[in-house]
Length: 475
Image (cartoon, rainbow, N blue to C red; front, side, top):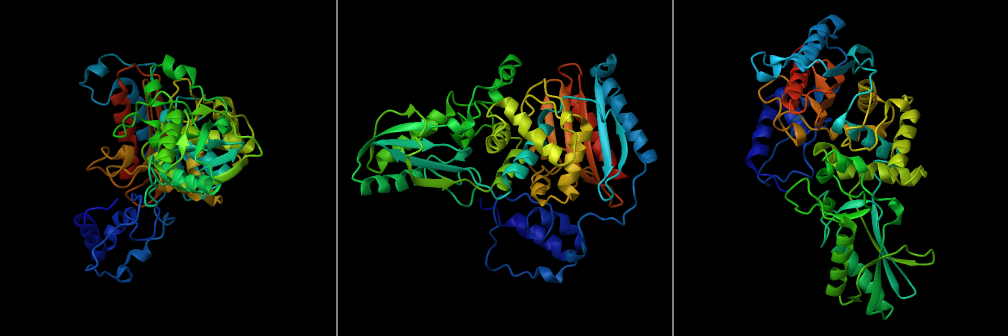
């Protein structure tokens, strides 16, 4: 995606003026750092000649261990405020605060990122409804199990006059040519069809049966309580092959085709016909072991798919990350197997696997349960742990008032352009998990959840969380 020239030029000027522009330039990949909002390289006019070495940006060194540490005494008022606002409302004059919501629970954990010490917590070891903060666990599971450079392969196989289209986890296929400068649409079914047709023609094959092989993902029935809870329009079958995530309308982030995998196979059949191979009606079937592979296309790297998953809170990608991990380790290609795969990774990270008691990996189920302390611990390991595989989690988080699911939050506040965190939103749960830097320059790792509140008062819960995190930024 080519960006407009004006904004990059303004940002570059700010960078040259002084180190104040470093964080913004970092976000646009113009200087080294953990911030990033670009999916691709930035195109600049050839007439722009700026030497980044002339700036003072290189003096900035990640987490500032010399900044003033935050004390438990500083955090206590924010913790007390969080609980009060969760139960009594952010605005005391609002109708929501007319009667206290005593069932509302607030849980929060704050860790000093540099030292790893927990500064303060409230209900940190209570199992709570995490909503989409669960996707941090999904990302950690896939990055640790598959690796940041892993790519999903979509391939064709041929045996006994039958052609098999095998999915392996790529839900972001293009129906036509792939685009190597994109994440969604990196691999294209049009390219796969062209390669496959060429191989078949070399074997003097002009007509074939086509079978969709989606066996790698096993049971693809949606989680039953997604529909029972009225959330099924935000999820679909966890299929190993789909075009544009299986969405019925590519302009929306919800609402799925009835059968995304079959729709993808039908698009592939049409591309085969376009390349001169007659294809009979698509059927489902598993390729036999003796089937020879004809062609393949590969997805964007896993760390880029994690970027797409966390920035936009993509439910189906989160399920695919866990399902592919479960297939890799053999824990079972179903929802229970996904949770087992995640728990195995948590054990490897020396974390308590029982603290992850979800039914899914996207966090869409209202029956999901996670301890805030676990979310904070995984984020802490991603930020500072020795396992560099988890680092893409940090760079994939939405940035306050800048992008992703935080693009409209924290505008004109201390957390603007500062906090980077995974959001979560359900009928009776709001959450936020990530990193924020204080006014004095100390980086804090945090996880905060408010759940069990009265349905319809979610905006109050979100405001209470935002006030808490913005309060951290002002310390």
